View (cartoon, one colour):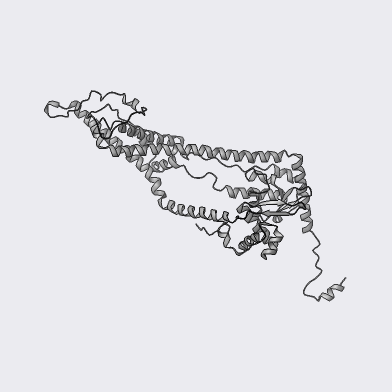
Length: 435
């Protein structure tokens, strides 16, 4: 994977043309037009316009319209700090990605391995307790058997202790007694679960399975290019809003779209701002605008808790709950059982892991719920923007009509007389007198 992408905002700072453009913006007191930038930087008007749109989109520049209709690009005095901040974030992401690639499989496997080991340790401890209890029940105390009081061994009230959070066991004092016990049965779940996937299933249960909209930007540009083409190369902010974030202002992500498709803003006769994309200029049919208005909006998918099936998720959750219940019971009886007192540190580790194994997905579930609500709001804004375009107000209709007039003017310029009146192959004086 290469991080030196010419399209990347930070790496493109190495491009001489972009550096000239940034220098020109500073030289012109952060408020420029494409023609002024071309003059100050020595770039062509098209190149200056391209970098002006790109820099504005990357640094949060805004558009300003003067009383005479001139469009200015306005920047803050410290607009280049945006590149430094993005560069620092990118450096941190690159370092994090490197570490992630090194530890990824180890981490994915470790949670499942730890859960299995935790359950095995708990089962072994319970087996030891059962053996001690059976020895106490069937042994002969008078002939050197175990002298363990077992009056409470079959007392099932300890199940209620699982929900009694006011118990405070002491690791330094205990009574040599054996409370009641009931073997936890979960072998059937393990046997029915598909082999070879359990460890990765545990990781998916804990951390999910990645972003649901990893190719959102590619889809966004594809939709926007289709809208621009369908409208003959001239569009308004309202026509692009369903494919951005529902933002109908003449700034923000629209400037990124101008840089992406080599467009520029233009003020109509009534003061509306429309966007011209010369590479997409073409004739439209009579129903072209209405067809573009009915295009689908950009819809983001919601985050899923996990890609696992419901049965697999329940299986992992049941094991996690059994792990927690077993380690919690052991923890609460450290002060009452001699064997558990000697294993206090192990039991503390088991309980900590059991809590973490349940806490991480619980916290992630809350975060996913919040993120899905934000995605839902963005989708709703895009949908409202589409509905506004499908049922336009008189102002939007006028803006679309004037956008069509601008498109006709741009096409008229491209259809101007291209008859050759001079060629360097012949003498200029002779060509002046030719009919």
